[in-house]
View (cartoon, helix red, strand yellow):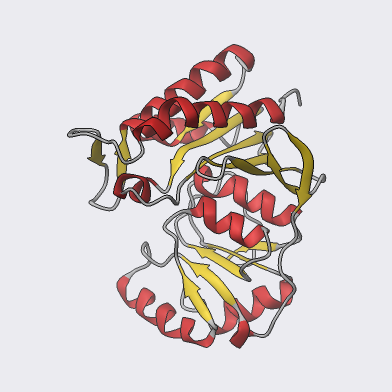
Length: 274
């Protein structure tokens, strides 16, 4: 594989500085639009940042399949090229668009590298903190800062009992009756929340600050980078039926925990209804 992951990380940063941050809390009339419903938004920042990244990657990786969230919104068939692509770059130009549009500083830029159906690199850039968490398969997960050669290795939290767990659970895409049962069961853990931004939820989890994250809707730009980073930080990850999570999956739910025993307990006692 000939992808310069450091250069890809720098591209995310440059796109954020050029196209995203100048628009933060400065979106004008017509700069925010709905896609599927009032909580599913796209802004000029999303589209402009993705165009910039796609154009730059076309120069450096002309044979890679580019799969961006907004590109797929315009051409849904593009998503089906991912499983068979020899090399694909998957991009979420603004993860947490709802927060971004509301002026809430909890959003990120994510990219992953998929090689022959396997995620081999993942990057989550935080424009507000101006740093990355990133991983290449088999090389650990790291917090890196611009112009700082001292990267910090990430490690998930030590396991704790169910009643002491703090975690993130995205329940918005569950059926109403299932959502009610899951939210009732979440009372068994110490605290459960949602940032409405997978980028920051994965960063918190891989950095050892929470004990689990759970998602139901699986789009590759939302979860490939964070799952690899979390696994490289020591997490146990699987779909809710226990099968491995792969780039081709768009459903089946996803649960990550500090270890397999914690995963099993969460699945049995909290997320059994899914």
